[in-house]
Amino acid sequence: MRLVLVGPPGAGKGTQATVLSQKLGVPHISTGDLFRANIGQLTPLGQEAKRYLDTGELVPDSVTNAMVEDRLAQPDAAGGFLLDGFPRNTVQADVLGGLLAAKGTKLDAVLQFDIAEDIVVERLLARGRADDTEEIIRRRQQIYRSETAPLLDYYRDILITIDAVGSVEDISERALKALRADA
Ligand code: AMP
Image (cartoon, rainbow, N blue to C red; front, side):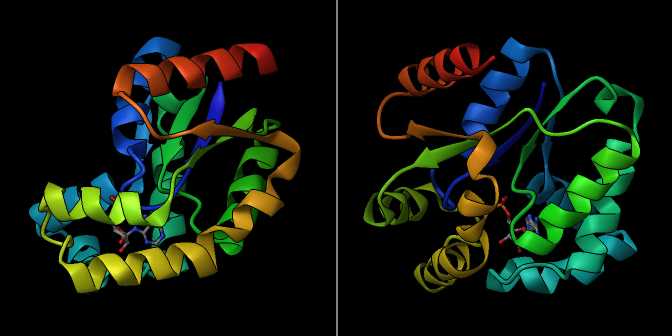
């Protein structure tokens, strides 16, 4: 199963990705987590990425795409993966498509977590991560609308939309049911 999760910051993608990756037996690959790990370990990539995460801007595609290419080349991702936070624009989506095509594979589905912006902003304010100040949250939602939301049309042929309001269990059940129905 090769899956991409799409939804606004705060839609619960990370939480769902953890559950779904266990149930589906594929690794959870979060570009945000990869950046944060690099920042924590003070790697050159982390030092480059930090200023973007601090302000809520997207890390440049060249840096992000290279990191994802490396990660997808690792053996555990050969049989499938669940991408969380990548792609975030159509340029990244083109690169991902190219990487997969080169290996003779493609995405099976893109899961959209559908939720109203005012709900996610409230959630993020409650989460309290370093980049969860109101100003940065607003900027990240703006970037989602302008850069990432076009992916919903880009992936329209393989898009599965899930109502992302509800308990963690209800939402993962909806996602698994929709994926089964799609298979
Ligand atoms: P996330 O954990 O998915 O909310 O991502 C946190 C931050 O990491 C984002 O606000 C961006 O600065 C950066 N980031 C994560 N994924 C990407 C990506 N695919 N492209 C560019 N920047 C990203």
